[in-house]
Length: 156
Image 1 (cartoon, rainbow, N blue to C red):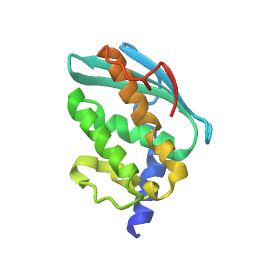
Image 2: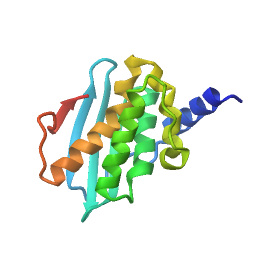
Image 3: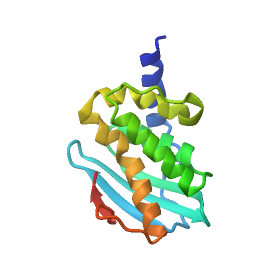
Image 4: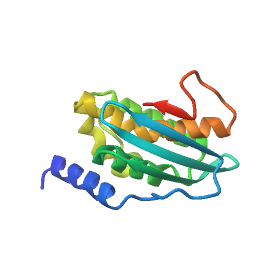
């Protein structure tokens, strides 16, 4: 099996077995994001315990990339400090903006490394970022921070 096949298998595994799927309580903020270019929709809840991501739960509908990326993101972010989670978000975003020319740290990215190939397809980048953007927006909302693009309903 070559590397691209392995990455495709990781994405399909997370699509079939979505980790942390299903909306749960308690939560500090809930956001709903839509990717109008392909119809992906995601409702995501974040629960913080101080400055640590205690839980993320979600319900999503859409393509395998958006669903798998959200599943991977939850695995990576739950249990981290918010600042570290935001740093990981920025690293993932850089990978998505790289057009596939990115050498991710496998220890840091874990299964998210599979999305380096997705970065070669500009039309799929929004799919891969949907859950990450929703996580960031919900967390900023909990922290009382605002950005011009942060709302409870947002198009990715």
